[in-house]
Length: 243
Ligand SMILES: [Fe+2]
Ligand SMILES: [Fe+2]
Image (cartoon, rainbow, N blue to C red; front, side, top):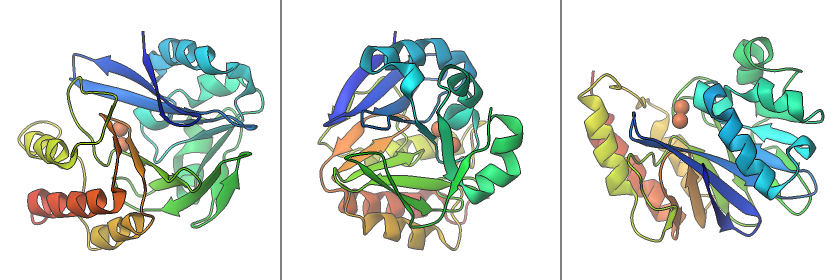
């Protein structure tokens, strides 16, 4: 069964730990006039995540389904969600919609968000930032909820293991450990370090998030600006120049 944690008022994290890969997969359910789910999880996770969402809202009332980039844990179960929620529309970058999502996983066309565009779901305001290759993939983007200061940050701040749901302590060192570990195994080069990485991370830091909500691992509550700048340094240390 998945674990539910309220990480900010009416923003809920749904966590499932998969021991075979030693990774938690988190989805985020936002309760609002127009409910939003961020990350669908893989198809295989759909029954357990659906059961968790049903503890929070009527899943058939979902209105928006967001994700960072085209990948199974981000949007693999999009079609399953859209089949039970007739008004649920996917929101993603233009590239995501055009090159993959509409053809491969969407029951109906996605809505492409422009860089800087704000989606209002009721009391919440989600700003979309186009962030190519951050964390990875050409089509990557991020959603930042402006009123609560919550950054839904996908694979940034990825931490392995069965870690606590939410923390005020540093999570960058665990992220750095994961990067080093992955560089030595089959998941090497998980995240690229490009000529634009530092600038894009600087833009995310400028949002000064109060809550940082990764897909894998603990949510961090604290000085998000410093955390992102520390993460940028960790990525540079481990990834810049690696083959
Ligand atoms: Fe990813
Ligand atoms: Fe992921």
